[in-house]
Image 1 (cartoon, rainbow, N blue to C red):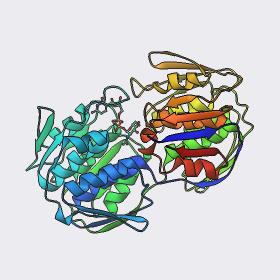
Image 2: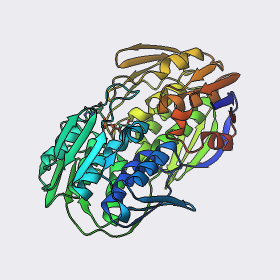
Image 3: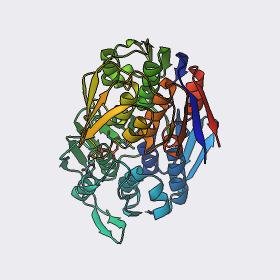
Length: 417
Ligand code: UD1
């Protein structure tokens, strides 16, 4: 089993180009099957979740291969509508394939994605949206079986702006006759990227980024080449690392607008931040102060995916920072690991209070989930001594090469067996 070992306490300096967005490329890979032809994706990060999507695409009969820097999918040979349990278990977000398979083939059979490390993750909103489009869905024996021979567009209101349900409904609506209006849709930038991809493929979609998305289904599609948007959570991770360790870093291939709540919190904590077209520069003395109260919320609010990461940056800050996790029930599993490094954090239900400590100490810790693992990287670069991080497969789901990237910024970090 691999570990990441960090000798903390070094300032971070330098420039880094940020990887493409995991949460954007996964729905785009599902969307690729809507077109019985070729999709070329540039800026696609090489992550274990992307590899899991590639395995699903190949199982479905598509070709999916890296050609140099591009990931190329050919869905003209798609010949299956089922995804078996072992592939579904690798990645919960593969449920997005449901809407796409139904739209393309009119049948689908997926093993139920179930829960995950963040607490129960229901898919009731996904299923309700697909049913409203006319799909018949049965949940039996751990499987989801769907038929959708005659999906018809209509107005669908999501009871909360779920990212995954919005994406699933968008993909299914592309295969429905007529117009679908999605009301109370999620406004995350990754949804706008999915829309950009679908439009480049010939689908008629507008409104993404706002809470109403309009889709005209059954449009002729054509081959598509798309560049995946930058990963705002990976960017937040490297900004948080520099904030915690101190130093000056420049991130390129970022969209500062996507990071405004994260940079506002880091600014409130005492970092100097300047942003330009496609770049952000952060300067930190490493001696931060409380960021006040940070409440996670759907975009454009503070991202739940950056909660653990910002928390890790503020462990040595002067004063107390309060986190309120409003999106997921069980998203403080990283707290015990951070406390092993000397952090002072108390959790009650959805609220975590971080009281700054003078120093963090390297320790043997383990990733509890993807972003919880990223938080350990941030704490590790700011801690005195050696931190050894285990269960790093969680981190590898969402970060292309964090050892390479943090080393490029001057961290003393290595991958060890
Ligand atoms: C996506 C992101 C994830 C991020 C999350 C919130 C991907 C691959 N993952 O996850 O990184 O943390 O958005 O920004 O893009 N819910 C229901 N019923 C449903 C669906 C969701 O009750 O049918 C609830 C969830 O339990 C959760 C909330 O809605 O409390 C938000 O979940 P959602 O936006 O769907 O997150 P994901 O799409 O799973």
